[in-house]
Image (cartoon, rainbow, N blue to C red; front, side, top):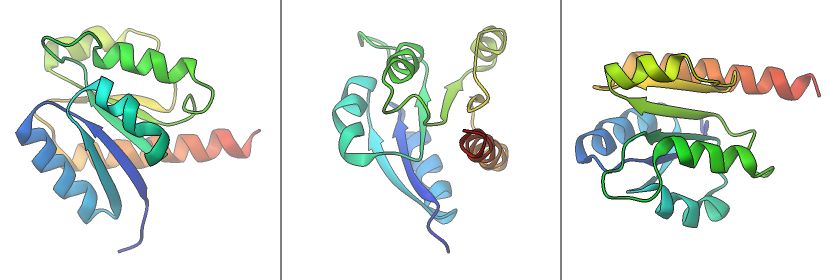
Length: 134
């Protein structure tokens, strides 16, 4: 398989880390995992991810997935990295009406791996398009 980049996967859920990691590795991505946004912020400089996938809820943590997205947007070094938010059905409805950019998306949990792969391809294409218009 051809190397497609590095996925930074931020998830406190074992099942999501296992399933998403296996699928993304099979699709040609290197996968770096973090259990919480704070850990992801520590790793992001070294990793320079091609794409970031984060759960929205981290019970007991100071930083949620949505706050993590805001921190990334505020940093010029990472504001161009596509971000996928993993959200349950109810939260996905709320997030749909929020101000997501072309390179950001919502993946409903439980994760449909084919749907996830299609969305990642779409967001990476949007990024390439945006970069070619600079």
